[in-house]
Length: 311
Image (cartoon, rainbow, N blue to C red):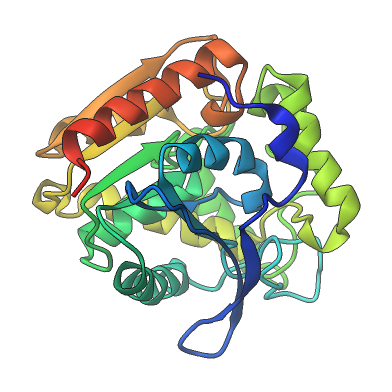
């Protein structure tokens, strides 16, 4: 089932990378790879600080099955510019801006691509996909949430959100919340937090070395404030109203997002399947070692065959 890793370090033939104007004129970097197979269309949304190049290997797997693949870098990160003078800082003023971009982009994507339509989101992307479903911003035939950011692990526990609010007010809220790594106050390396596969981790570094504009460092204090607010509002919101078939992939040993939040929320979704991973998986399930990744891809394929069949 594993796809050759050769595709991970080049934009595949037939794919296009361009710019898509959001309704307010902000230019988002877009990836689009049409497939002749007519299986349907996948919109894949990455996590905080990610770029779509990290998922080319998985894109190739789905494309070979006939899926048209589309993605875009979120506003303020990767190749979609910055919202702060600090070029290495991922900032957003309000997560509602992400949802507005997703709403507009998905509407055009669904109008221009063949169905069935599936939206997938990793980490922050998973959070925003679920929020988009709750708010009615998107209405795909099915959705997949991969290590969704529905809670975060923090050494400060319940004090994390009020601490972020306090510190955001003590200076420019657009300033970086910390200097490096994905998580402050940890002895774990960034690589170990993300994946047990050193080759797949190295792919991300390779892409960043080719274009330093793709590198997004730590989040801003305002991003943290908005993330905590959005996660709390989402869990307190009308999750039970989501009727879209969902598959959630959860890494219980995830050192970045709090898997317990996903496990609390999943039973509230009327039509959701859950696949759990143990210590064999870090945060980036689709970029993990082959046994984890292949199990995840098989589960996604089975879910899509059952809930988003070919038209």
